[in-house]
Length: 458
Ligand SMILES: [Zn+2]
Ligand SMILES: [Zn+2]
Ligand SMILES: [Zn+2]
Image 1 (cartoon, helix red, strand yellow):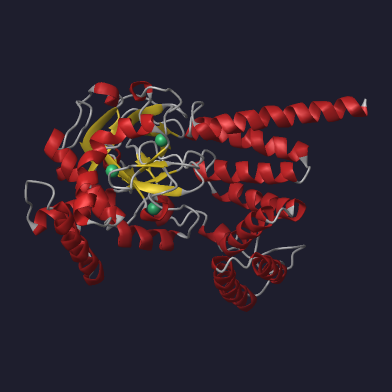
Image 2: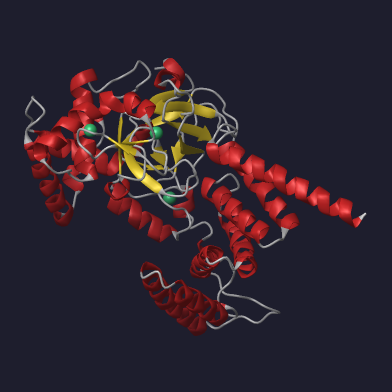
């Protein structure tokens, strides 16, 4: 099946993984395999007044829908663009007198769309939404209880929708959302802001060393007329060369985890046993648990065990203080922990990297840039050894570190990191993405500053 912009992919039977997509021609790094608008999407409950319900940008001074007083938009243009998606929701919220949670809102948006357009909305959609996997029968008791509660809230909300559905039908939709829902981030990729369903993307299987990445592109909303807005869509982009016939894969989980932890998470959340090469050969697990080694001195197995134990305790305390917004305490705990970790855990040890990451982030927030820069640099050095070269998270982390170093006045090193991040994001996000454009202007600014310094010196 090669239709629409799905010309480079083909649906195939991926054995015990079920359905999958494979390349019908050779793809190169940075190539857009396909772009797909969301079938349906909603903004998270907690951000409903801070993120536009149409373009999903985080923006100050949003205007709210005068009818339901729930939906918020950048302006009238965004509101008009979204009305088709919102109108039934708007009526249902008014009728119910309260707003149901994000999953219920998404399920309803999916069903309204199915009623209006059926489960297939374009020629290039390879699968109907209702044919996606739901894994309801694999759910543990506890999850089934939550699902049931959601279904009953849904039925109350849905009274506005004319066609009635059985409990099984609704459970099917919730199951689909649970294992296929895609988290949408804001335009700068800083924060998860919503949940959406992209049917073609759902067909791409997981691998712990994926050859593609799925990136949300918010499109260009600067035009005054909504008809000229480019669509909110997800792009599947190749992160390396993919040969003809090779299966396309993305990662469903954070790759900075030991293989056993990734497998556990994939089993719990997506109901399959990952037997990819990285997992079966435990690739890089040794680095992620490595002991520090200096001048031939290596800590004993007991010391390493103790180091792991206290690091976990510290991380819990750090997380608690962070929740309480006691940032000075967070910094104190991080410093203490890093000092204790120093001759025990290697700089690629996951528990050390987590502390370095929090320390640099919180210190930047407190504007103690030079100490933050020191931790950011160490963190990035560790990440580079663990992540595959064209990884989006790696690119974003290097970008943040570059900004921190820049604030700390280390312009030359900052420029180096910004260029490195730019190289990665050109592949993972592409030249037209908001974040890549931000990076490009930072690259030019740091370059200009460096030139000015050199001129002064001459
Ligand atoms: Zn908007
Ligand atoms: Zn409304
Ligand atoms: Zn794996």
